[in-house]
Length: 216
Image 1 (cartoon, rainbow, N blue to C red):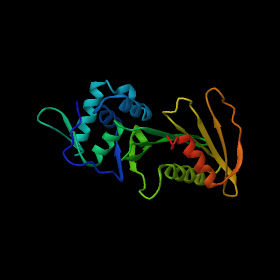
Image 2 (image 1 turned 90 degrees about the vertical axis):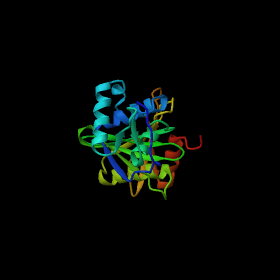
Image 3 (image 1 turned 120 degrees about the horizontal axis):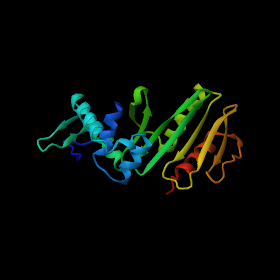
Image 4 (image 1 turned 135 degrees about the vertical axis):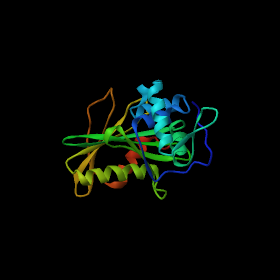
């Protein structure tokens, strides 16, 4: 199954996909990038499951998000084409775990040179793809998600890591009081976290850019 597009891809404001649909979109252009994207979205174990891929394709077609061409290939366009293109070409996958006293969940930012999307999990293993606001940088978008979570869950925390980083560095963030933050970094080889207190927004943004490796 190969992706074809019938019109230019447009960035989705927000669009939801079921589990099987996401498997199908990640299967359209197979390669290392699509595998790592599927892994980040927890669907990598189903990429070779033809029944799952077919179910996802049927669902996309039924919703008007794709169509079957005469040659049997699946064609996507518009916002769905943008999602599929990013899954197969992302160069940066930022995973942010939003922690609460009862557990938490993770959101995933994916980026290539042209498309930046936030993937947010919802009920029944669905994912929502949402466009990054055009007037902020990717690091600022990450900061906004963390701040919104900690404003709503002041006793909670957040972690952020770039999935492509072989060192496994993870930044931990929690409320520090007075509008400031407490942060720390760990790695698999150095799991102990040395906390830095009294970090302001500018300092947290700098740490986010470091974890994201924005200079690379």
